[in-house]
Image 1 (cartoon, helix red, strand yellow):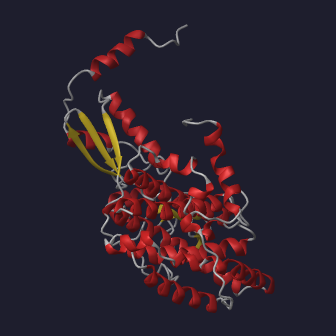
Image 2: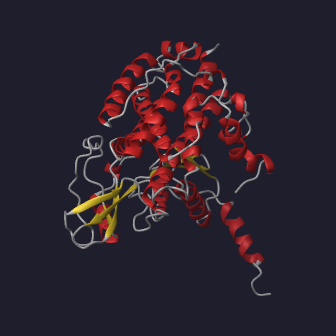
Image 3: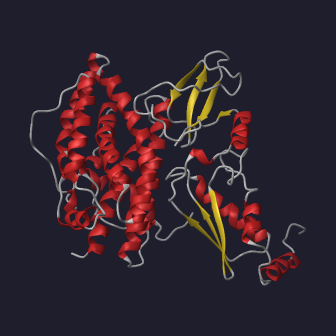
Length: 252
Length: 182
């Protein structure tokens, strides 16, 4: 694998994860539990989709086959997507959405902090920008972790259920393969073992403060790095890509 | 029908576009500084720090802009506004480049523009972009843009646009937008 191929794959991983979680959050539009939360989730969704546009645009440039960010977003099939499994999990109740977002926000907070010093200038520039936004996202989800975890008996139970259900998707966030190894050697990507220890410390602290428990099981669901997804992604793409596929090449 | 476009007008645009550009990059920068931000029309795209540079590359005019937030939906509108304004001035060979570095910061908004925001009813960003209290949830000293009271409460970190948070004044009871530091 060449550095260029590794970089393309890596950009798909970053860009697809943000695109898919951004799309998931956008499903709350008009359906948020209160108006302020509706607005907050859509603001956050916008940051992720905007960032995905830039990352996938750069992926297309790196690939050099004349594709655009829209081609990558709308004309790939499920097995070609490289988003983390946690990002495609359904919204569920508000506890599930907040927990999914919190676990991913802590990940992106430390990942983009590390990517700020990437030797690839474009990745570094996008990381600087993203990290500012993610800081706001993380503050928001952290407040909700406390509010719901340390809230009523019902909100506590729902939060604990959400953590139990989603925990199995967190392990693969730190898996490394040839793509990572090549880019670590080039100084383009960080060693995910470092991100893992920062993530674990942070997540464990907040979950404990929110009077919640880390699950005791060790099972880890994985596969996104090879394009193996849960059944949820296909349905998400069917909706997200339907207009573009029905009217190929349509412009606003 | 009188509403039909007149051929004479169409020709005059063509004539202008065939002329060599006779305007410097600095002059174009000043010209584009008239364009208001689509979502906060009280300040322009230069005051907001979105307009970064104008360059002539032969006969191609390149305008460099940067987004406030990654997904700011106003960027496309701003790009169109730039092209329309330049076309009116007879400059049609225009490329608008979107750059991400250096990352946009509220530090680029000067005091004069901040005063315009305040007068418009938006509490301007504080001096530093590094909001150290952000993750710790520390209170900030904001003033209500209506009555100057510091007795304010944050309603939501996310407001009507990506760059604003929603606050309420506990004295005059008015809700207001706060331009977030980033």
